[in-house]
Length: 218
Image (cartoon, rainbow, N blue to C red; front, side, top):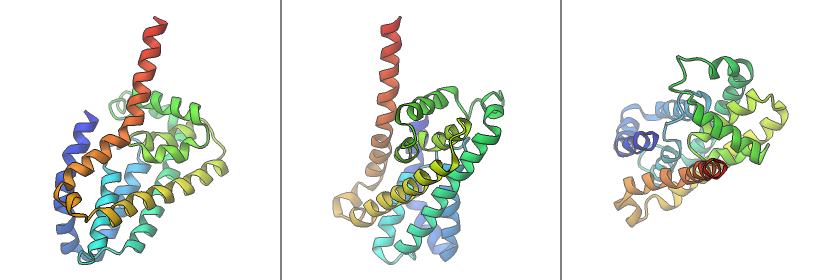
């Protein structure tokens, strides 16, 4: 269900964003900042297409005629990613227990997602803050899980900053350098969908692995 939701947003995003840039000019940076901030900072909204948005922004910046500056994008998107995870950590630390047991929010904060995030965090420890950046859904739940587990904020902040900058740099850079190659432009929507699917593979593999262990245990 989540993959279908993500992929349904992609074609509209690639068509809508240039129109919004033409209509709002520099104000579009505020909207882009908000989207990345919300995806990483609001634990009940883990399905926004952050990877594809960054890739698309990078490709538009490379064209030079869409009003997007790659350096401004790098700065504001990195700040948004870091600030979003910081907020998510604080939410987990102060309200995590209540949110996890709230029936009203259970359809958004699904136990399966939390369990997956907790196992990922338990397996990789502190570096999970960095690694989780590159995995949709887990990206949103990892800082929340870190907050719930009362991780030392100084440790969290280090991996948060490094992870946020690296994620934005890689995604924007991929779009900037490869987004306007002829074959990429021809199959732009398919490639962005592929980015989503590939980035979800580690989480899917982990889920299948855990399911296999349960079957063996039974």
